[in-house]
Image 1 (tube, rainbow, N blue to C red):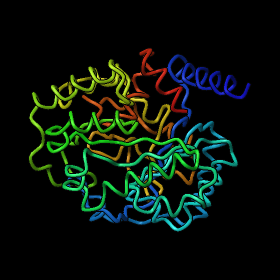
Image 2: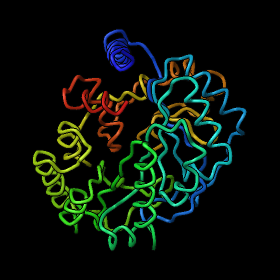
Image 3: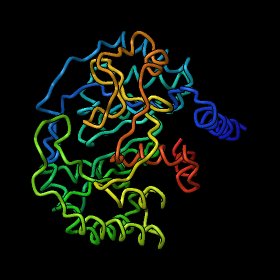
Length: 326
């Protein structure tokens, strides 16, 4: 009964957003901190620290999200497990009946898991076989990611990996896919962004367009033949056009929102984000969302957000993907 009620709530909420222009923060991504204990090659978050809201402010934001119709909250960073009050914030979400996800590199996860009883899902960064992953994310990163996933499975927490399709990942993609099938590792794939995340530096040695598209074609084939690729067929077909023109109706400010570590509402925090500066989530998430203009980006890069955007356009495999995730 509860599952049927949840499915009905998701469907009706998406319909209100699409057909009636409603603003509902169904999915919220909360960047608790930009501190990180990793130094991934394509990310500059750790070198771009900013202010962090105190726990009391985040408690108020979470209560507001719950009252506004949130179904799922993802805690991100930096490394969110470095935020001292993470356990209390997870518990607060769970008390409201909100699904809770943590996006982590995995290093701190096994030790923190016992203090996170309300956790619904964990996404762990993993960019390929051990040799590739550790070249991109640092020595020991592969072992930490796998240990985190196995700890989640043992505790009954759903989990999966997020892989960035860097040049290094693409060069050994077949080996990674075979590993994922052999070990039962579910993986969501997304492009490497053209700039270092939260940085003004361009990525060095990004994959060529043809190499990238061949990789997406391989993922489509792998998905059809039973590999644990978490992207929907519609999502991969869309991402195949990255970074070329691929207009998409963005759900940012309509059904999902990002909240920076300083408490500011954003869509994705990247250069395509046209959200007016300074919309403070502590003054009300829904009023803030109403101030966010429709994003008219030429392409979407985030695999998870792409799935939501395509679900809003009623792409069947994306709708199924979003419903299953929540």
